[in-house]
Amino acid sequence: MAGIPRSTYYDSRYRQSPALIRARRPYLVKNSVVGLSIAAVAIGIYAYTIHAIGQDEFEDVKVPDAPVRSASRHDGAKKW
Image 1 (tube, rainbow, N blue to C red):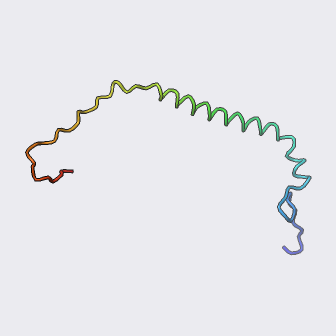
Image 2: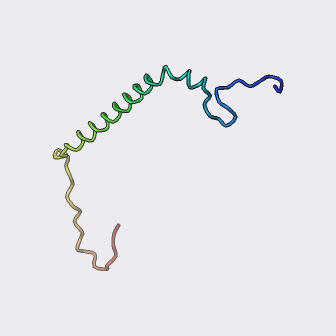
Image 3: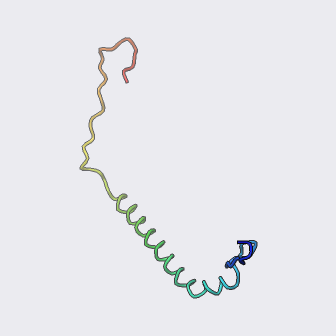
């Protein structure tokens, strides 16, 4: 492999070459629009979910009464 030159879009300091910048230029706007659209959908779903959950009152959920401690234990030990 020592005799085969390495062909890459990056230079020795791993910066983009002008050829890579030219190759990516036609897709820059399209990719940005798609990325922003996906981010907007994700943020919209998150905001809708938080809004929908915030309206729930949980009135239909039965909450049990607090447990009654028995007065028969006078030794001071706690029952966990």
